[in-house]
Length: 110
Length: 95
Image (cartoon, rainbow over all chains, first blue to last red; front, side, top):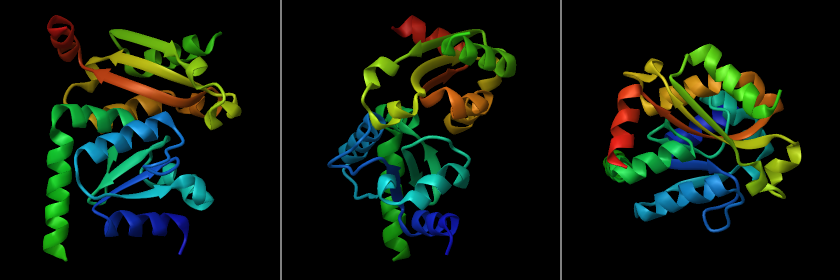
């Protein structure tokens, strides 16, 4: 399976997934740190991929959804955005709503 | 031409904004892995009619598309605020 297919599978199988530099507990970039803080504050389980641990994904991800930078947040298979959009949505309360809904629909499907 | 001027020029050409602010924040990230590439961190605020009716993600894509060539040479990370003229007025009056 090539890297784009692996990404497709990851975003399909995980209702909430963030591609980031480092991990939520040890982020290696300020933008990744702020984005995962917002996700944690929403109190929902989420998956993450540390792009530093997967060179192929690192290279392929900008092409996958035509988005040039990291982190990238996907909810129900769709790119939501990077750090700025994640924080904007968090501040307006929309992020929590969107994530709760993704978790709920994931449970129904399972 | 400085990097800030290049970014302003690219945004001006594509989005014809009413307002552009570009800040170089590279100094805050010295020593960071991305800084080693020699490309910088920038904050941009763009106020443009072209954003009207566009979602946040579409607006950010428009900004990234405008500076696409510079993403390879000058920009490592871009923090984006993309507002319509109406939103910009609403924000400044509420602050």
